[in-house]
Length: 427
Image 1 (cartoon, rainbow, N blue to C red):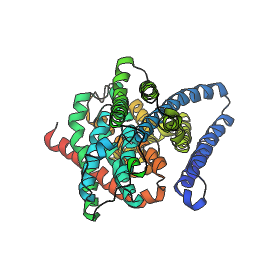
Image 2 (image 1 turned 30 degrees about the vertical axis):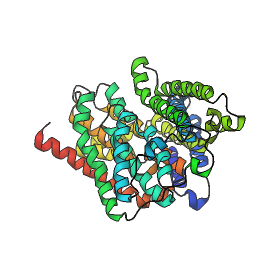
Image 3 (image 1 turned 90 degrees about the vertical axis):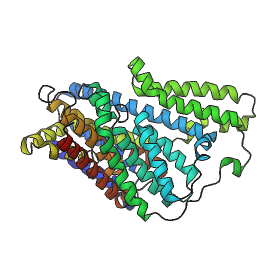
């Protein structure tokens, strides 16, 4: 059974990777892969009730991610409809590609630590659409945004879901992880940024803004209000989670509800055409539903691998056969580019006990870095990559050819930095 499920997963993965060759949308392939994996699991196990319980547990987690994604995308679309991002783009005056690359990646790196890598990527892709008109140039920048978002999320307890898992599970403390992983994460980002900056020449052309294309139905106060409220709603998500202990998607939905009411009120006196274009209803129509379904398919397929015990068996195999944490943990990070990092980290947390590896030990910190940044190597290796892939229609193979090498170099540069700091300074 396990071999069959692994084979189905690999075939589905290859179909996603070669989407433009076989001419089948990746969302359709992902959905089919997820359903078939679970169908095989059900048909080959004599206890369907047990599988139903496992599936329910996974679908609860998956639906939370999907609702979060829908809410965040809607908020960003609403800000965009109001030209709210002009607040930022008007302050970024440079058109030089090298300077712009450093500015964008710096913003992404620190914003991801405050928000999370998924939300930050959604915001930054929308921002880059306002800054760069040429699609090829924009995709290069988005590739580095994915690296920056994952690197920024790794050193913050709320920046990446796996770091949050380790934090909530008592494996790391917030202050220590920020101190220990900041420099390796920064090295992980700066290395590919510097390499790419030598290849970038010239300036970028900006697209026309909505106000330049046609009459703008919003005024400055309305644009600033929606931008501040929208960004504030996203920033409030980790605070809401801490205060209520409810899942992050509840915080996003809370923010979306507030923003919905405010926009209804401030546009109440406008004509119907302008109100419709600036409404949450219109923003919901514009969000990328195929990308959300792609998320659903991929996460469902990975959940099948976790439920069958394939991932935990593989983790145990590495522990028994390799044993060296300096090989095992980076391997887990590389695997997170292919398989979702959440079940891999969950398996590792169950495999190593807190007695042998207490809080803030080398293992947990190293795992937080590798699982957080390793997903950048492939575009479907992280939530940030999948979101960017859907929003900008980035091809899997394009990313593999143009960005994967840079991400890999940055990943191992950060690993060397972390091991070096531990070895020489014993922090």
